[in-house]
Length: 210
Length: 200
Image (cartoon, chains in turn purple, blue):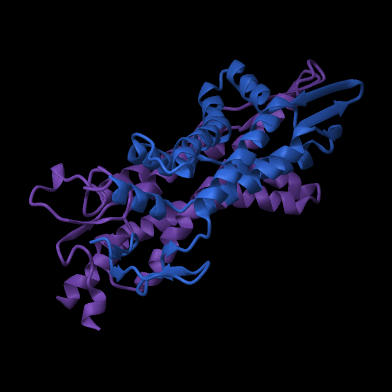
């Protein structure tokens, strides 16, 4: 089985991240370009762990105002009512529309939190050079890549509500400051997932086998 | 090293073998999909892109949702919603929505036409690598299918306030999501890179 564990790095090759051509690794990695497509080559994503940590921490900071500040402000007959994400969820549970409460809760509260927790877990396990259940950890990484975009649902809902409920003094909906922070959470977590290199999960195994 | 490929998730090297129809090659160590056999990829993707462009124009030209409260009636399409956010001082959010639902899907369509139309007639477009790479980097930011869920949630939220009237373009939105997804799935980037490598 030893030949089955040959990775590109071990045999002095670099996989082009753009066209997937295997290229010879050069002595000076900073100036390498793929001979087929011309993309800059790097053996692993540059500064993957530091960049991912920075983006994860930024997302955690944005996550707090995103949940505390109102995401919509309804002005109806002169009275203003602010709603945060959670107060919207609770309102729907009370009015018996639990499927929609579940959708909003999953997309806006649970998914960003889950994504951040998975990324933190992956970062720590990679930094500790853990070789525990690498296949499952790679699967977790793939999940974070897929689910992140679904958090945008709330931003889109706000866009539609703002456009439709615009009836002068009768009822008007404004977007609240929470929406900006919420958008920031979605964008930073997408970038965080992009900057993490799943090959780092597997790099420890080669050290053991060598 | 054309005959080998390294897994993009765990770096393990595999030999590239021909696949059965609609088959997929999977990494033996981490289970990532390495490459897939996509029958008739270029023609299919081009067809979906053309359908996508027509639906995109329809979806953005007519209102997709209307709300009737008492005697007052209001309709919206994407652009009016984005404009409303912008006017309210939520420029950042307005730009985010504009990018993810209008500009990125449209740019994806344009990039695909730029790449696929010349290839269809046996020519290589100029600057193919840059455009293909750009197209690939746009993928995470195209969020039409998420927007559709946003429409559904809004319909339920507004149901208590007044009468919801589905607009003409709601159906083109629905179709557009399936077409865009099919377009992304049927594009075989490996095939295009191979063509580029051979003909250069």
